[in-house]
Picture 1 (tube, rainbow, N blue to C red):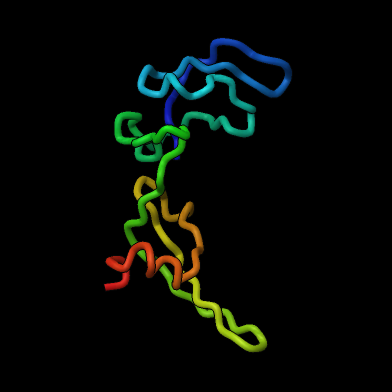
Picture 2 (picture 1 turned 60 degrees about the horizontal axis):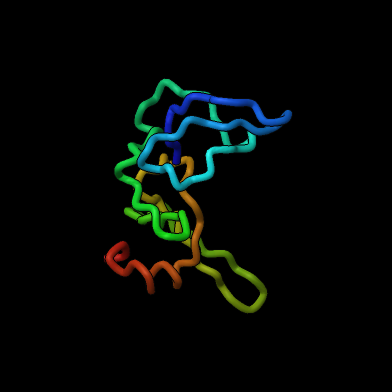
Length: 113
């Protein structure tokens, strides 16, 4: 998920930048390592409006899964492990993650109906 674009205010050392963040996320520390920054891409669908992100007291947010893309079964010696590829809200298909099917069924049974 990307928020921005944000203006760079100051370069801090060789690998960090201080950004001018929107007021909606003013509680977030404004200094970021270069590995956290991305060049502005031409596809506006990859940029999430700040107002749609619900940040909790710990300054984190919950990814909300919206679809199961693929299911796979890995066979080990004595058991089988079933995983599902989960697409979350405001993610591109390339960003979908593999999760344990059992855990996803417990938390989000509506995805399996």
